[in-house]
Image (tube, rainbow, N blue to C red):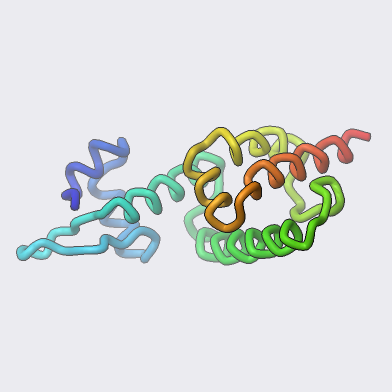
Length: 142
């Protein structure tokens, strides 16, 4: 477990920001010290890294819960189509811009966190999602 100061230093965000995320329910700590201070475990850090990643992409905090819900539903839909044996270029799963597709496609296999998340759902899914994104981006330019 890490203290709020350690997490702030590790992630390059302020203690105030971490307290704000806790207050609005975006990233709540898994534990509290005897004095009531937040204590974050590895899962909390992963959640925070995800929030910071999407914040960097420009997603407003107010939209986070809606985005998270839609993202989880999309991930389950993608896994369902993958399990059914569909080719990676057979369907379009989201309305991301061509530019966004180009930026995100390789992330599914090069970012260890994304790759592990998708591979845990179904082995081979990370590469398939990358191929699906690339196919969709190509269709957008045809």
